[in-house]
Amino acid sequence: MNTPLIITVAPNGAYKTKEQHPNVPLTAADLAQTAKQCLDAGAAMIHMHVRKPDGSHLLDAHTYLEATTAVRKAVGNELVVQVTTEAAQVYEPYEQMQIARDVAPEAISVGLREILKPEVPESDIQAFFIWLKHSNVMTQVILYDAADVQAWQRLRASGVIPENKWFLLFVLGRYSAGQTSSPTDLLPFLNADDGAYPWAMCAFGPQENACAIAAASLGGHARVGFENNLFLKDGTRASNNAALVKQVAQGAAVLGRPLATAQDIRSIFLN
Image 1 (cartoon, rainbow, N blue to C red):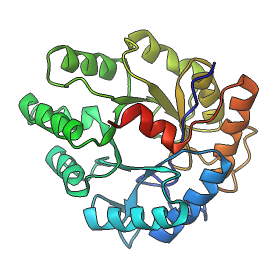
Image 2: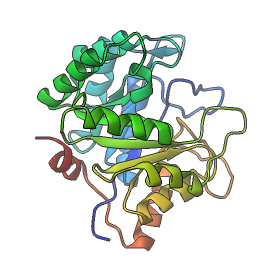
Image 3: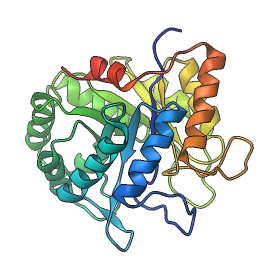
Image 4: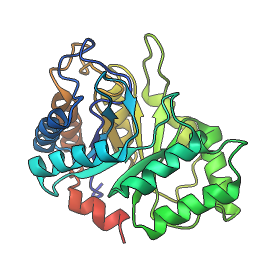
């Protein structure tokens, strides 16, 4: 398998705290340090959340741009910097779509079910995805189950979603106490997916690495990090995000699959 494996690090998410792990990066300086460590471990993209001073979830253009600048100073263009529109039970669909327009980032993730709401006309969803396409924002569409995959395919078939170089993310499992994911959780997604676009996965708990390697063996890509998991494959706590990235890179080597660079990603997804 010669297609380079894209390893994305998701180092903090909307909820993880320093109390849960002292190396959860919350500030721009933290994110910059983590980005360099994860680049050296094999990551090619960083999925970046920003926080308020009290550590709570934030969607804010200035804070995103400040963090992006810090990461760029640390790694230059050697990582694709992806921001998120995640609601985290705080933001509404139009606020989420507006943050994308305000930041105009290189890359962004969008949870389909968070904007596909009864109060949002499909014409507004169409306008948003057309803007993403025309603005050349590399867009990863987050899908939480097979029903989300089917909704995504329906929107494409009906013309609401324009043809573009989209990237899918299959989320294995959910946030909950004791949540763990399994490689078999990939099967419903793969059975529903029509194979039109590249895909990656993220997973919860110490089987995160097993899920990542399963995805890599099936031609997919992997997102790992403290956002969803704090543990190494042996069940011990990871020292930092780079340790989780390194595990996937080692697994890719066993599979004989090369690692993607940021430039590889840009050549695939950006016009």
